[in-house]
Image 1 (cartoon, rainbow, N blue to C red):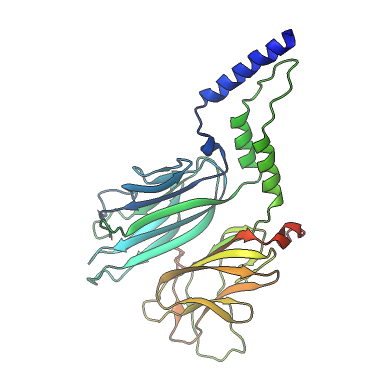
Image 2: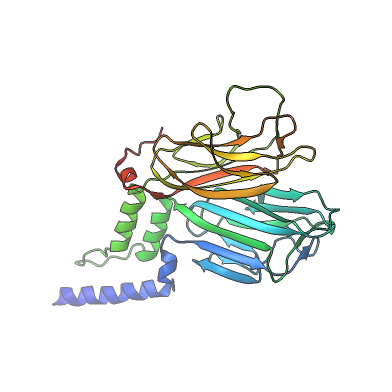
Length: 345
């Protein structure tokens, strides 16, 4: 009887400790996502970080619209996308920033144009706990971003793949306070923790995000086969399935994959970039500085790559701002993928 009383008191104490954390059950799961919009313009010099006045989604409460900052709670690979409107007769320059350091930039030099133009960008990056991500605007009043009740300015991000070790440690720390053990009582067991650990280790993962820091200029000469656009910056390459030297992604796990690419336009050349599959099957394309995205169903061994028109009148523009990017990740694996050898090269 004394042993049972001791266990009961221990359980009450344990529940009290857990309650004192005041953690929403939803936030203790491996979920983090946000999407926010802004309904008014910002002139450079009035504020640095882009803030938001409407929050559409905030799973995990990791995004603060008043500061415009996403604060990482769960380490892992995150996908971010943002869109801004060009203010008439103002220059456009917005940077995605991680811990105060530029990740990628968006710029548009046609500031003399009266028209309103929308620019978008996306990237996948690895975050650790307490890392911060936000959008930064140039402080000079010659720069601005435009929006109205439409709105034109949006910012979204979500956790694609939680870190397979750190995220579990986070869950464990919150579900069972350290050093809480009562003699004669069995240690507390959480079924959700065990399930998440098994699921994290068993599910196949494949993701990449790359960028270029130089332009790719077309040349007027005949080539026997189309060459893939290559990249020199690697943000993420989970599984090692993307070869930035060859510019090709090779499917190891059959399933549905999401791909997105952004290209910059050279001031004196045209743009024509196609998303290719296999030996040259066109799946999507752009004719201007723009972003394009789609889902593809891939089999093991399928390849996906970008092709830029190679005539001398065409080019893809980029510099240290990394305007040209290419990302992709496995959304839903086929049943076949669950039984494949997941030893990565």
